Length: 470
Image 1 (tube, rainbow, N blue to C red):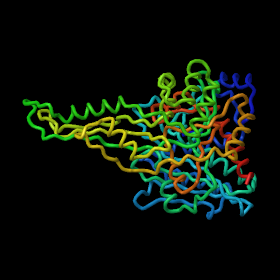
Image 2: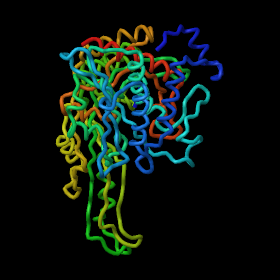
Image 3: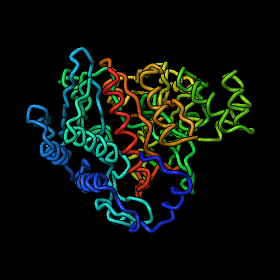
Image 4: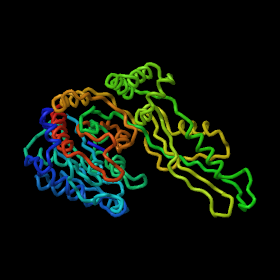
């Protein structure tokens, strides 16, 4: 997940080369760092952590800043007492103006100390980076949103439109209690908003820390798992027969691997690739332009799809992620199965994707079933100038010369649950990340210190603009 003071190029380069201790924080940055550290160091993994505890700590900071009890709603269920969250409200002055919502998840992916170079649940600042699980995904944004509300309250900022913030749990684990889903189904009035700002956007840096581009996420692919399963009577392994569940499954998986879904561009991905063709130029830029003009151009598709991200943005993708099979070393397998994880492009459905898999495998012996949960399909929000305009204008001030483009996410966020109840969700730019994704979900997750502080300033100003534009 994840998410500024204007600094000249010479000054920025100097900051990147300075020892970290030499960089003096502004008083407001120092306070933010304390909040960010507390949130990051509160373990919120599903196995042993507690989102409820993290939400309580952020709520305590909001109350200390002047928020009243009635402005903060904690939520959890008896079945999931550690997976709670909060909704905070800064009331606007214009009763006719619809609220805006700041969304961030505070749960994190599991992390084992023995696998990491550093303690994953201690915020460590080293060589210009913050290291920790959740340092980028998504506690950077959760901390920025909480800090922004605190600063607004302390400054007695009175926005025209009400600003809501939801910190939720369960985004990172498929079968966990999901706070955003629960709010959408059980307390929609609590999060009702004209639009929401979420993770999914941001910027990308090259290996030297140079800003390459900014992106606003406008829509995302849907996630759906399918199970492939083959069955046979089995028997003794000393008497092998051609009908073998594992072999039949392997052949089916091979066909899934070989199958390429057709290019499927929508309004957002078409705009992204049009802009990207101009930025990149060269062979790849020319191929992108050709593919935008003709999505059936196979030669152009082969060139563009060399980039895994571009390949995934062009189409629905399905990949094998789990395998199981057999029941004994000395027995022919009676059953074999595989999980196929699909990321479905907007405009396509769970059913059409399953049908495409069945056609590609073309084997009645292979059973294909949906794996719960079947979540809502992503609804792409409009390319709304009221959202994209201010983000672009402010980006020119903070990041001069850095292009900003709308992008469709190939991943998945909790935005799908809000969009299902009519709230368009935008993954907002501002926080620049590394080209490798900051190690999110992997080992030694990190975020550049400079990027975090600059992103905080940009997002603070952007929220203020939206709040007064009602």
